[in-house]
Length: 102
Image (tube, rainbow, N blue to C red):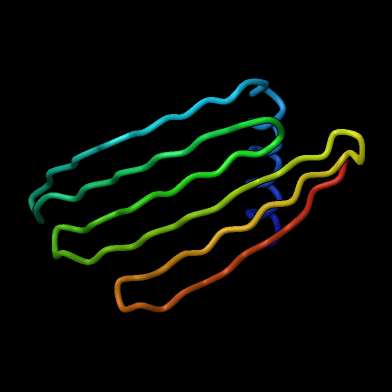
């Protein structure tokens, strides 16, 4: 579990470090299988040393999961802090946070 969080934070750190100007993005995906159609909608933006994103996934059965998160890096302190909140189809939530120092 810690390895996954650390890997995610490192990836987010590299993303923030490569974005110097404000930018935004959005993605929409529809996948159809023999079980039905799933949709994934995501958006995010970066400005300065911070990035945030939000993703919604809906299964072929109508179950929806959302995740929103952000990462902020302080190059002078050689650290990045990240947090995310995930809400499942039944309303349960999970909160994660972490820090990476280099």
